[in-house]
Image 1 (tube, rainbow, N blue to C red):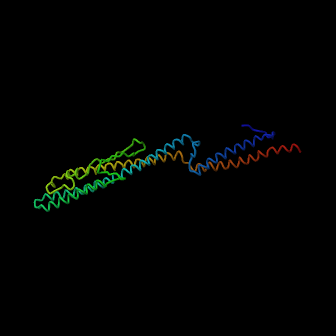
Image 2: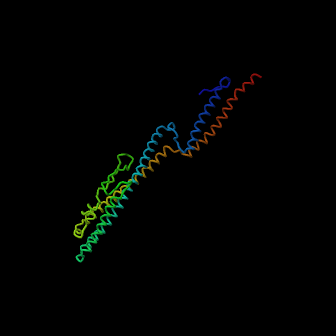
Image 3: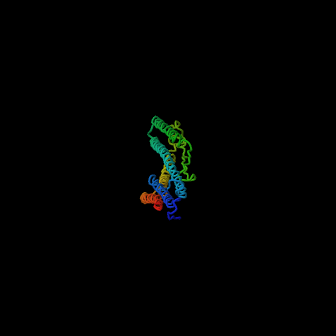
Length: 274
């Protein structure tokens, strides 16, 4: 660093050096003030290029995982709607089983058996109605083969297939279509097999909902941990920044005083001309 004795007044080296130091201090002071104002250590890529890139990657990960959490919630909703339909059908099948057992009473006359058959036909029709009206976003879940993939992780390859392959129409479940049950074929209704199929489907839904709950918990934990890692990179240490600002404010004052002294120093040589 160059120094001047002050005897050459055409160029004031001391003043220039004091001015340069004041500019550098003011620039650094502005950086720390911005960090305090925004709460961020990195406000532009120039502050920390590698840290900026890493934080942006973390931000992308968190947003992808947040979307995955929403997807998990939608998948749980689909399962919830389907489970409600299956449970109602299971209750109807239990009622049909009860009617079937009642019809096996040898004391029943033809009129009583026809009445039971008519009631079973009504219940079978209700099964078909439930199958056709159990929908999610306008798509039937039980009346046809439903199979949809949900992204349940950060990567597009992390998917979960939600499907309901069990056909719950009255014909498939009871082997007799709604409206075709008579006093003659009541005993032929495959109610036990139907109950087993529907209960198995409900059990599968419960297992998959538990799996989704675990995935949701893992995603939430991963988001929190990633957010913490990003915070260590991006966020400013307010206490440390305030210490730096206080130090730089003092240096600004001393630099300003030195600049004033350096500017007035050449005037001392005017005494030589008296």
